[in-house]
Image (cartoon, rainbow, N blue to C red; front, side, top):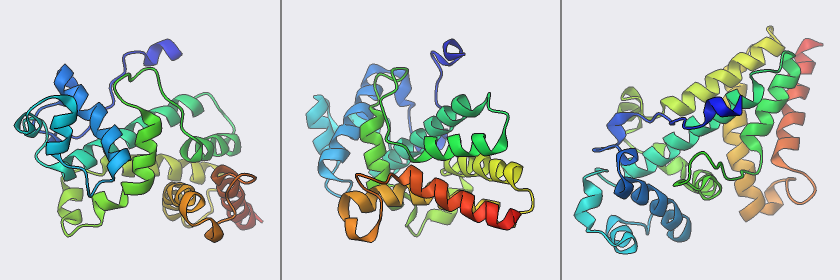
Length: 227
């Protein structure tokens, strides 16, 4: 099965880039180093001038791939959620029992990320930290509704839909599968953020993982409804 995923390409909305960064070594270098620099500087202090200096290319060459850094952030986070979907499908495709499948899905969404050797120009560990710390900046904007219509958040919404379907398979009578699915996705990011920055606001830490917390939360809700 693993051989089937070798050479897989994560599809990203082509409206997020001017030129597909996967189409050239410069484009891949832009993506690779932007992940490193956003991790180092944060989204606010990151810009194309600094990125150009780091990769040894003109700032103007970056604009041939991305219109602005907001679109670049959307590209990176869309890639991440598409990759997360691919990981989830691979991990759960052969699990027949709904409870076990949902448990595995929660784990895949909330676990500590490790690097995926199938994508050498993207460090998924660093990208995960960017998603935890910066993802909300991609949609807490005045343009969010228009960007949603353009499909910029399709990979995130598609992943939520998969989780919702798993929830319904486990408990068809549960009234709020979409809300619970979005709680899992958002909660996974938020609990990782809290344990790293506001540890007094979460029970997650050295002894309790976000996965354990979310698994307990989800199945307590669903089993209570079953009862």
